[in-house]
Length: 413
View (cartoon, rainbow, N blue to C red):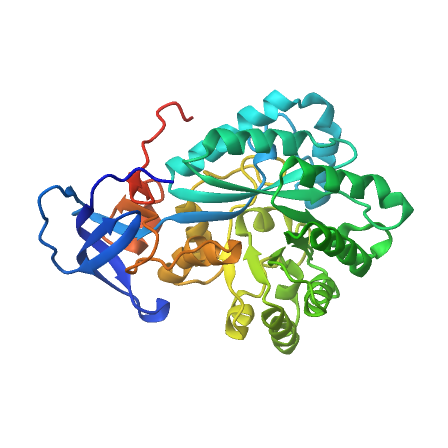
């Protein structure tokens, strides 16, 4: 699984310690053995045979996890422009351009994106792959191939992102495609119930959960990606999960929850917590797509504080990378963390948890951050503080996976 041959001692690294609201930073040595953190102390005397790395002037952090990407769409911003700048404009651009994209094209762009993510400090990525009647299973086939190519560098998890409709006779072809994607090896079932024809949000949610239960896999649904305060997808999802869905459940976006009164936020957040659903907020894309033409212009994020107060784990992801849904993006966790500070009102330590340990928890990855016994998935960035690292954004960094340093790919552009 990993190739660390001898203990590794990371010396004089600055780490963040303590609760996020009162986080302190101090300098330590970190001993890594057999792919895990064995010891953290102010000073550890190296023994013969140990490898040592001086991390003076570096902040050492739990490595990042990207909980929500669309690798199949990456780097399409120039080819498929979003002419209206909103969600439907992005969807229309992808539908209109589907005929210009082939399997090799998707593989090339997706692999380039995931290698850039690894270069920037990610050790795991969950990516949705379009499964629609106009594109078939091409995106799934491409990401399955990319997963094979990057094995050992990044753990790539694939979600079958079902198009609409999925309900009734008109949804039969779409449901068959989702089953076909599962046959090809995707890890989870996804979809967009809030976009279901006829407003059949509850019914679409039930269909997607039924398919996932039939194949004993989890779900990650695009949920209430709208500013409409009357949207009910998240509550429907929570109630259906509480009826007995036995696998891991994630709700991505949940934008509408940020548009309702505090009491309603608390009520729904409590249901989400009871159902054990993880939530992923996606500031890049939602700040770009949502709220155009509104007055006043909303922040367009989910109710991060209310969800956390209820005990829900809230992760942060970048979502789209230079495509019709988001024309920008650097595939960098420090960029996402910066948006969580500025748009989500997180403190720096909270923001990094959202893109690292909390993102890993939502994906069900075994991680405990920087603590003895935790997997040695680490990133060191040249900075004197976590705040400074987030502010600098593109500072040089080094990444370890299972205690093995990942070599940067000089071909990435």
